[in-house]
Image 1 (cartoon, rainbow, N blue to C red):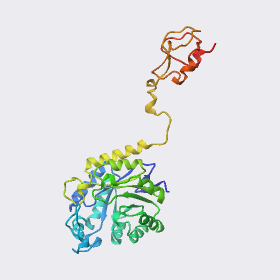
Image 2: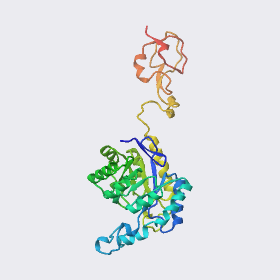
Image 3: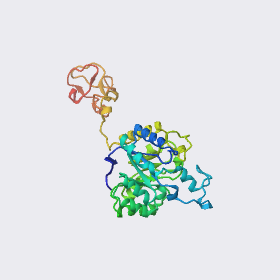
Image 4: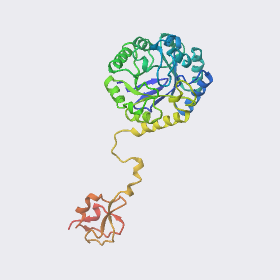
Length: 351
């Protein structure tokens, strides 16, 4: 497994802080200025990248109201697929100004293409990476086309089973993708934390020999922060200005202050992982006085016997360890010892 990949100059892998993608998705709500503001807030919060979705209602579905095209239940109940994506899609004319805004802000921007024409548009804009959305993981021709760009690729697993994930990864690698992260994902909106099975993140990395991460659709940050401890090197989360904004994805997205907390807490979690270490840390070194050790608690003359009356195990910890207590008993002081002296081997002897 490659220890890291690089997107737009930022290294991503176990040896680097988690890469945080702020998914703008449909939360522009039809207003490019709202999209700009989400980008501003994502940058301020500390996100590494902003991600778009590149499709139109015409490229992703068709205008049909038969039963197969009707949505029943959930956030988008009562709409057809065409109606949902007509309202949610980001106009292609917005892409160039959004890429220019990202450059101005100093935040990386890329997108999830949903067909070949979307890849063509994003190539014209020199997108630094690509994301394959979870529902598209079975679209092997799309994965092949994206892989052929030679850009880093992120694939969400979503509803895919093990075989489908394997096929997607093989297709990517066989067609030129050399930098890949596979995201564990539950394609529910929102998704219950108890259905996330985060242990799958480490299994993906081992089973498929890839970097792994998390696409998180839960309502808070606990799942994402926990994922870092299980090896997630990249985390994607939907973001919005206002969870009550009424957009297609607003209700399960993070608001700016929550995104800032996510960026901070995932970095802290990564720092806390550290390495295997049994040595005393810098934070502990000043606290040796709070350990017990053997101290002389009464003045002793040279030659006087050490007993439980004049030697005790007390704090601080600058004397012999308490495990030596029994072997100390019955020995004799080599010199005069003042009360409050930490006991050492040099201060005692056997007769």
